Length: 402
Image (cartoon, rainbow, N blue to C red; front, side, top):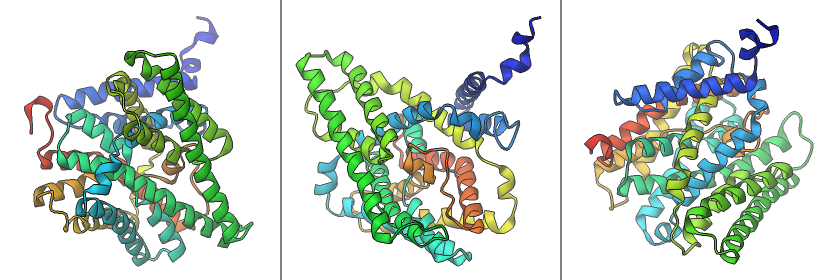
């Protein structure tokens, strides 16, 4: 046989490895779903088998080659998060909207206090706590889609995801500016760093307005049929993401705003969910496969690390549940369910989006170890807890379960 077609050469192809990982994740996911296990765990198993905890075939250098593909998947996910945010409801809902905002803030504060209690420096604890404000959009969106969940609790949780990511992004801008201006490798003042972070946010918002305007203008001038508008929208999303990528501006804010504008400014009936659903579902699996591949189970074997990670998870859930107490629109069972459904967390790369694979290196060794353990525990526990929360709320309708 020709040496160029030998099996080892094929296995070394980055595209073949990523394709094999995606296929394995999908096959395992659909198999698990038949036994009422969340489909996202197929990506968890595939990532653990092929990534840092297993064969090591999917690693950072390989994923770096597909950065733009992964960013495109993230764009679809974040756009959908923004599209679920109902600004009118958040503003007029009274105690409900305030409870969601309070839950967002107390979740980060509780995580910060627990991290400090385990001996992390206050700087590292506050920095990580600002990241832990956010709820992971991939996990919740995937669980909602798989279980066909809908209802008041699911609606509020979907709004919480977008709200938490926006608040986390603003908090991260402050803490990142402080860390970079006061760290060992500080290169500028806090004011200069803060202006730089604010500029990235502003530029991301401007790109969102520009890209949405291009979409609205193109579809109206050419009278694009409703069934073809998703294609024009996808082009606008790619333009938005590309502009953010080359200028290092805030892609997360920009993509979220694209979804918010479509939900709250677009008056025409949309058919985007049906047209983009398959691409979004594949995006969920691909992004979570990447997350699972980066997990090293050995990082959880150190006693203090896993205890601290579990304590942070528990504190975030408890803080969310406590903050929901004043709201009168949901009963106690739904509040328990919502607190569980919002247990997942994101990484620094998840908030930066256009730099997904590069973790921030300004943390001390213990803080970095704990953040890695948190992300590992998130991959293992958060899908199941989110799924349990949706079931507890009684708002899932797949296979007749409610």
